[in-house]
Amino acid sequence: MIKVLVTGAAGQVGQDLLDVLAGRIPPGGDPTFQPDGSAISPDDFSVMGLTHHDLDVTDVVAVHRTVGMVRPDIIVHLAAYTAVDKAESDAATCFAVNEVGTGNLSDAAFEFGARLIAVSTDYVYDGRKGATYVESDATNPSGVYGRSKLAGELRCRPQDTIVRTSWVMGLRGRNVLHVIADRVARNEPVRFVTDQVGTPTFAADLARALASFARRPLGGIWHVANRGTTSWFTVAETAAREFGAPAGFVRPIVTDELSPAPAATRPPRSDLSTQKWESAGFEPMPEWTAGLSRFAAARN
Picture 1: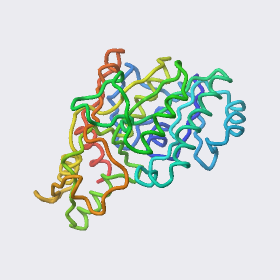
Picture 2: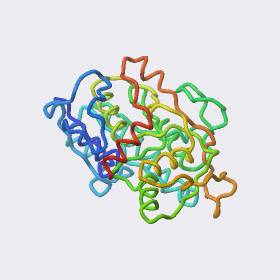
Picture 3: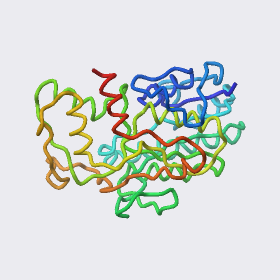
């Protein structure tokens, strides 16, 4: 049995990961998606999930004390500061959580013989490559959030697993899909940008992928996202249709037309290649449209 410690366990990915590691299918999950070729049984993992109330990852003493007491084989680090716009005026807190917190966990994992799986972001890229990003591409984050996550990556050790993902959406989190569903229910049309392109990732699918990394000691940087490159406008348009909205409910806009303008600069194109994941023998990630259909069916 593999002993796993999960930080950020109350978040949308954290809750789904606790389900997956217990052998359950999360809400909106795909029961056929078994990327490492086998199902997970309740006896495969022993799990302790910690929220930010349970563990302040910026407190180095608390981190080492907790890891030393639990003695996990694997630490899945999901706790993060993710308020992208707020981070622009709150850089100290953002870096404390995303850089220092990740470093504390990597150090504690090394001290007590655990392996760290740290979740990062597509925002480490500036989005100006003009093509899909692979793990070896140069990083150049545009905002505080992306810089803090990259700084956290740099605090990790070679044996740690860094999972870059993007546009994460889950049934248990407050995210754009819930906003769209609520607007459809109130018949309030929405506007979404056409000039931000990426790869949506559904929390249940990401959680299953993280469980596969817990089973295989693969260090280094990995991209994990659902398949398919799209814009936020297309995501919103597809979601609105799934929730029963009429044609034209979602209206196109470009980023420069947003009012008020967002504080943080987003990568214009940050879609992630998962070729490395597939080359390692893992099953291809589900298409994002399939994930959205599962999300809508579970929510409805």
